[in-house]
Length: 250
Ligand code: MG
Image (cartoon, rainbow, N blue to C red; front, side, top):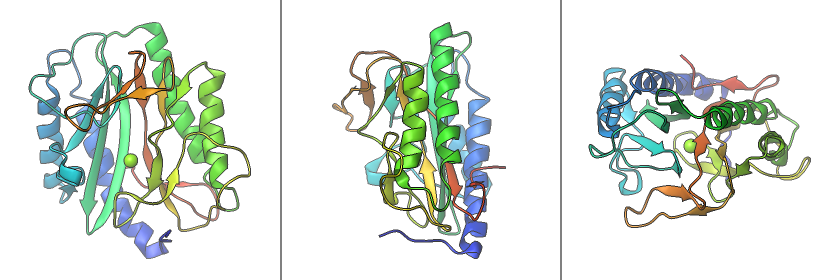
């Protein structure tokens, strides 16, 4: 069931979005060679709590981090660890979520660690562009498939693979609500988008094959099937009468 949000609900969600966005931006500023993903996690958790929020991922389904930190061929849901140390040439997807006043915000970005390979740089740029194309399609009167189509065509134009098994989602008082928001689809297909829907739009785009493997022993971390890098960008947005409203913004 899709929970439509009132204007007051959306106003309240902006605060969860603001804290999520600040946590993402400030944690991203710490990305450099030699930092462990656990340090990033501790920083993000502290920031979220200082801003009056609760880390949305901590304890979710038993998840042990306040952020998801996914490196190189890890697509999503990497678990922060003191043993994972960033090194020059890595990329890291950081996903942060905060609960404020019972509402959830969720956003992600992929950061370069020092200098990265040109094709990996292009993967990051294209994946972020795919997210914006998807967001731009999130308009009342369009259909869910229009979002997926926009993301998929952006990625495939560049020759990249679109992850199928993990998708965006509705969000509100729960982090994951209906509907699922695939990053692939056909124009004009799927449910009609309405004012008051709040969605987390989050392309996961692979440099090589779209296929995934895992999770394995840790039950969370998802990898690309071919070991090639993967990027991930996400915003929480509200559908309005006009342009989509970005809720995960400072
Ligand atoms: Mg999400």
